[in-house]
Image (tube, rainbow, N blue to C red):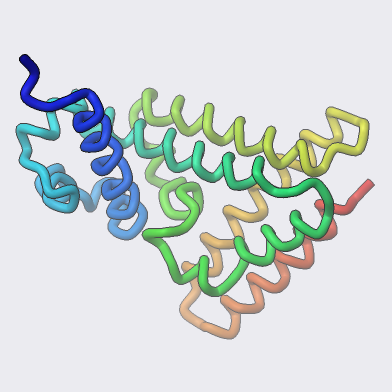
Length: 192
């Protein structure tokens, strides 16, 4: 007889992915050791290995889940420019800029993901492709190639803008980066 139900095991795994996602985004992948990650989830090191084969396995799971959650948000938006503009305003807000742990996984982790093993990069590739497809559904203008290119441009503009706004030390410049990014993102989203 199993000690824990399958539901308990899945809940524990989900909690580990959720808490690790917040920790990775706030402290970085390399700055987050397994002992800290399991403590955040209220687990032991032994419990960790019951759910993940390695830290890279956990990172890949976190990346996949974080991007899937973001895709769900974009897919749930009502069709139309008003919802796209609202999403852009929220994404490019000072609140999102200042919330590393709760914010976009791409903006917080992209530099580290590029140095991770292929499993993590493949999880990111799949998630980024899904995010681009979700954005493209809102930008569809009947020309699938142009729509896809605009979606890629919008995705990369958003991520790079948050990263830049977080990196500068001048609060006024940071705010101006967000405002300029919003204006350019709306231009890109509405281009025909």
